[in-house]
Image (cartoon, rainbow, N blue to C red; front, top):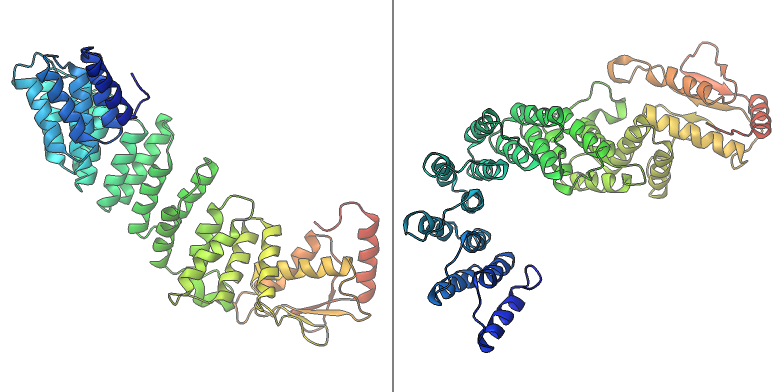
Length: 443
């Protein structure tokens, strides 16, 4: 009749039939009403339904369903129910089918009329003998979700399982969202796990609802895990997902494993960890840093901590090139400086483990390319861990391990001070010669 949803064109064609004295039939009217439904023109859809009856054209179930769909999309749930009532009680000769009831329930769902939705669900089967399908149950569960009735939503989910009706992604997503609104994060995750077991793929709405549920429950670790699962599934987290994780992280401070200079930034570490772990490879660390900077403006952390935390997390996820880029950007902004002293000493006292690796990696690169070249030995200070969380000498061991892992210059220990080591000039030169002869370069 006309392209779907082109309601103006549909009306023009219908009017053209009138002018040509061609009487539109039920198919013509139903197509025009359907076009109005897709164009969200519920008033015009009802006008056409009245017109076809006035012209003696008897509406069929498709006509009524299309008109109800228009009312549903227009937020007119009462009018949708009036049409259903007309079909069932006014002797129209049209028996409502599963689409009729599903459309009416969907109209109730859009307006949060969960009680009406459940009433229709019961009526369609018990009174009219019409069995609900997956879409019917999904619409009813959505109505409960919008009405804040998480228990009713789960009851309906149990009911459809008992009747052998298989839930789909919309069904589960609506139920998970209902649990989110009800503050039931355990139930939300249980439903998500059930989806996995049934082989029902989750979408962005599913994950967003589950992440929000974890956020409200303060379960930031689980929220972070869900962000990672989204990434693995190839689903890009939206801004709402990121902010939900940030909200969860703000409710919990984790400092036990942080270096001394970042003890006050436990929330930042958790927050940026969520963002970094969810960002796909390819440079979205800028987005993560930007979002964390927005938190800084609210008084959480500082710009230096934001960059330092970003480096730590990128290193943790083995994204070394991006960590190097963040460090370069921080230095360009005048941040994270002061590690090199005038006498050629590299003092890593205030560096985290991840930042320490990045600084050493830059040093090796500069030595290899002759950007940093002098005749002196290089003293590296890691400290003995007295100012670290728990008094553990983290850098003392990890910086030595890093240089060994990348086959860096040989280390010479400083007698009587295991919080320092030397990179002697002769060992640096031998290392440069060896690396030059090899094809692999620095790991």
